[in-house]
Length: 419
Image (cartoon, rainbow, N blue to C red):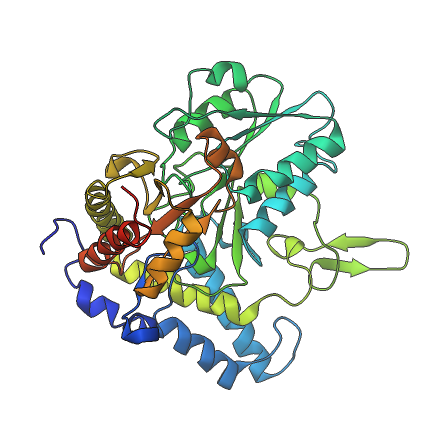
């Protein structure tokens, strides 16, 4: 089947991902539709990490030998790749963390401590009702500890941010606006730049969770309006255990260190310590070295395919999926129905069948989806549902896999004798 907008060499590209050729129990071919949870990895990422461990393994910035120099060079090359991929003005603005959650906690915690951006009693932090728990809980903790007030944008019935009260929500009391660029549950692509403009009018910092955006969209940190932006490697065909915090230099310079230990110091005496410059001020201890190297290979791979092409593919396959899901009786999609306004995650309900049962039956047919609240319980509560089933596509998803999902959902309805 021809679907306009798909990657032209899709079948060739799929051969880069060895797991996609797997056969599961009962001889079922794998249909992987859980990429918003974690993406699959191309062979080049696997090979790069194995090569590093086999030939270059050593700690970085410490060992005065050839392996140490090679490992340090590979780690810092990965930082260069990340900076280029997100159009960061400086490599020193790229901080490696273990995941996006740690990056968000780094920001929320250090904003409570001291400096020009300190959040205190009487201040306000604004988030949204569609956030992943990782962009809710750190801000709850911050406001509880400091006496600041937590406020949030609500959602429309179509699953978009309700911006009708933006001037009332973002005021002179606002110190931070934190929001997701692309919702992991609703798929909604948010108008980050528009919201950032309002936040900057009142002097607030803008923190963007780009965990779903960086894998799917061309990202330019200088254009989106973010002051601080985070993402995680494993959703962008990279390994787990590696995340990124990008921040404008003047903002990162103003934040105090988050963790103390080796590498983040300039000098240590028994009385006091002074700290290293960016980015090392925020990278205490031995970092996730091979994971960073793998992330560099992953972003190189995505860059070779082309983010504009990947985005077009995502929109095309998402549109095809939305059309297919409409043919399933009793199925309700949560979030926007227009593929141009959303990413590759589509959450839905199937009348009369629990999401866990839907996912279990689909799994017997080789179709991997996620069921639950997707770490977005407030968004589910907004729509009056406890949980949902979620399919999520990526650059390797084919129309045939969407057909297998739709056939599996029709089979699931028959299996439970609903309708």
